Length: 109
Ligand SMILES: [Zn+2]
Image (cartoon, rainbow, N blue to C red):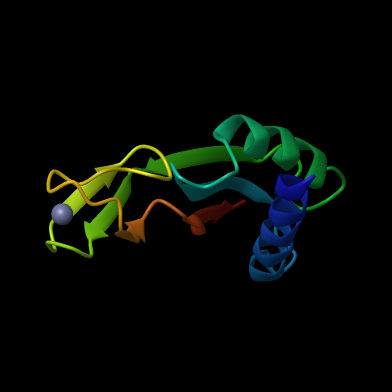
């Protein structure tokens, strides 16, 4: 399971930063175009945090909308799926946002 490996990695980073303290809350930014859905992330988080400093921590997920820039006309285009069409007709978009899976905040006890 792809998400579980990602979340294990995140749990590892948070544990290192926590420096032995128990973690009460973690906030993640997750891009809407990321393969990992909030449901899958929550499920993986519960599994990956068992027996760690993060066990029982509250997981907050902030979803980041997708955004692309049209390579044909330079316009910014909101992206709700991996392939979007610009108003000029082009589908050649440079992805600017929407892939994120970032730790933005953590609270230790
Ligand atoms: Zn365009």
